[in-house]
Image (cartoon, rainbow, N blue to C red):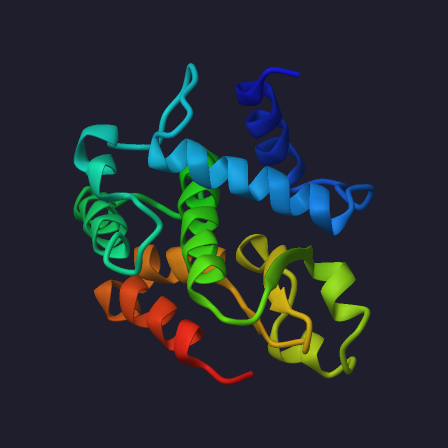
Length: 178
């Protein structure tokens, strides 16, 4: 299956049933989405405002998240609505990139899990605190059960502003002793 088709399949299934994939498959697909965002791979479609995204700086370092934040700031400047279907792919790709940066900087291995798979191992009350939404459908979790929500953080940046700084967020996740 061509890589772009795999990425488009990932986007399509974000809001539908993707319960069949193993965590390893999900990790691989989300990693590919991050690679697509960073420009390591390309296809027929691109992120919103691609000329405003400085892909030369996207090297999976914490510092590279400044370029992602700057791009999100540009999206906010033109009043992008994070709740629209046309924005979904850019949110997923950028959130995947943020999550992959976190995976690379943490000492403990993290992997992507679907919301239901993660919640099945947690206390039921956590669903009240973290309900299923577009931004929580994929959770980055460690073996100890610690978790974070990079895709949701991208949405919060778009909706609430730069106080949801991605570099600060990821640096805190990387330093956390979970």
